[in-house]
Amino acid sequence: MSSTGSCFDIGAATSDSLNEFEYRQQQFAAKHNIPIAQLDYLSDAGLLTKFPVKCSESGVAGNGALMRLTPVPLFFYRHPVHAVEYSGFSGMITHGDQKAYDACRYYGALIVAAVQGAEKEELLDNKFYETHLLWFNSIPLAPEIMKIAHGSYKQKGGYDAGIRGKGYIVNALEAALWAFWSEETFEKGALAAVNLGDDTDTTAAIYGQLAGAYYGYKKLPGKWIQHVYANRFLLGLSKWIAYEGEMWQPN
Image (cartoon, rainbow, N blue to C red; front, side, top):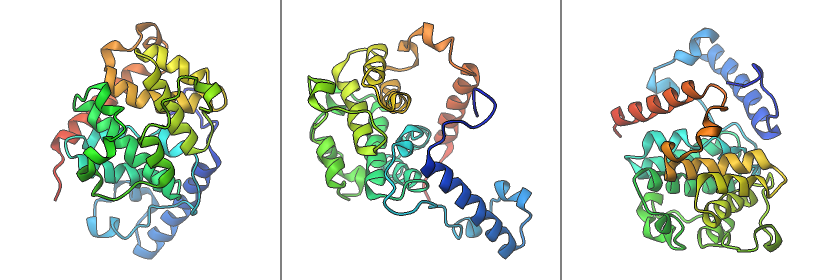
């Protein structure tokens, strides 16, 4: 979905992965004698598990993996272990670096905790990972992500203290968490994220996922909501994801 009717400003990593995905679809369809038009409706679990969805090259660690994360933890939030695991998988589809995988796992866990009603102090606790170790299947985070989880973003100086909203996923995660930590309302945090400069829209998008889960829809600025493209559709889609998540049960 695009506010202009066409795709724009897509990152190179995501674009490359989408092209690779389409190529694999064609190969998969030919191998299994499936019409291309039917691939999006494929429900055969056996066949689905055979499709290689991780379409990124290794070492790709851009912020695009984080900016689209929320539907995954929103769907699975009643099952935190699955939510964290699939959050990581969602990033690996387009960004093959371990740091991207772990940034998505950690941020997915924060979103799950926020949706479950955690207080801000718990979300920002430097020991959040350790106290939710079971959610992570006791699998450690990459050192760069663990440093953030242990509070590296808590810099009162913000930009002057080295916080940067750049395209590298480590910088982007740190910047989004700094904005969430440093301000007490959704609006002020979003402005803080944008005013860091650099990759402003993505930093704010990453911030908004956790902040939105924590503050809730009713505390979003009404003057902003009315200007969001297709806001009623997005609200309905969010409710649908949450509803489908209620129906889902692990095997």
